[in-house]
Image (cartoon, rainbow, N blue to C red):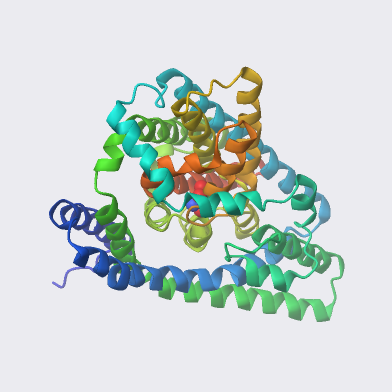
Length: 435
Ligand code: ASP
């Protein structure tokens, strides 16, 4: 009898494991050889990028069609207001809990204190050699809060679509595209006619086509994931992770507590489903988020799994997940809070209660505003650091471990979006059974 083909998520998992193991071996054996660096820069990393870029190319049309359709399918403005309000409330409450978990851990464990002199020196030397200045420069060009909020309303949505993934773009980007898409959906609901019906069908067609592109790209996922993870582990090895061990443990510990305790409690008591079954069905989403470090890239997989395996109706999942991929980032908020406090400890700056409260608030808001792309947190961390009097360049201290923590926080970000979609669906009276 022929063997059944391996399920896609198992293939991706194998890619992940192969990437990690081979990367660590390459780092242990060849980290002093320039050939390894050459191979990473010219072969392995570009191969990983091929996979990422195909998905990125579909993200803007996906966000546009998913959100506009999501709103149009909700049908009336009252329902839209209710679901939007619930999504926002969920985001604010859960993000605040995640930041508080992180802040508590960092205050108890104090990972920034008690490093040996040589560790301290090794970490300090990264400040001048890393690309921290570029990040600081970018943060220095940051806009005022009023300007940032204004730019969420795009003057020219096409310009925002073009600049969305450009690090140097100063406009509203993805948030502005979301705003435009919401408005298109709203107008579609209010202007129902034979002609707009054609437009709605067109949007549905666009959505289907984009999802198909992504499912084709996902065939490359096992190889793409192996290359992306190999690049990280071969460069990083375990040295940096060991040196910043306590910091890494605090971040990972906070993420795990939020994932396994807070989300499980929401799922069990507020949604009424088994957390175990929920996480089991999320395997593919979790692996994709972990290996790509991007909530936006993981959005299509999250949409598919939420509809097919968790049976959340499309009208709710499209709306909540698409908004959440940028706005509901619990892992990012936790990380931003922990990192600022860690660096303040590292530099011996004792933050007062009021300053810590500022960090909490900034981290909660940053969780909403941070782009769902790899390293999206970094410029935001620089801004918060500077606002509490710690030099922005000090972010270089954590550069070495940022990627692995980025991979981990993205898992929490995406799982949080799906948990939100489950909760909103349940509160809207949907029957959610995970047998
Ligand atoms: N990589 C994260 C995400 O896409 C954002 C960040 O924290 O850097 O969800």
